[in-house]
Picture 1: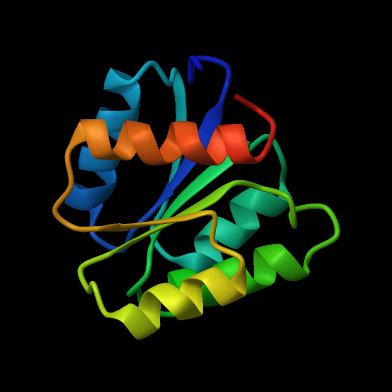
Picture 2: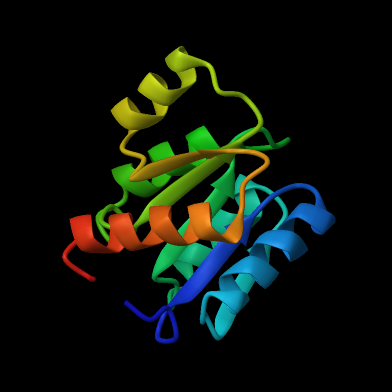
Length: 130
């Protein structure tokens, strides 16, 4: 599936990482990305509408990616949004916690464009969008 029609929200407290992820999804065909520096900023942008997919770092100040995911899943308007968590930690308990919270996918840093594409495509298929 082409990502051209999606607006993807990239959430990370490091601007360099946001830029890397945004550039990767652009390479994969996404024309529209929105960036947020933490979960608080991301939630504000999600509530204003127009976002179809979230790629969020786990470890951030103010509101973590997991807390953001929990708020998204608790929201009537946002609960079905595809959500991919990115983390530097490959701990089994984190993966289980992310799945329990409703993450559609989980990627451990560092990752390639191919891995990111595969995860996004799998999530879109699972959500009936692919």
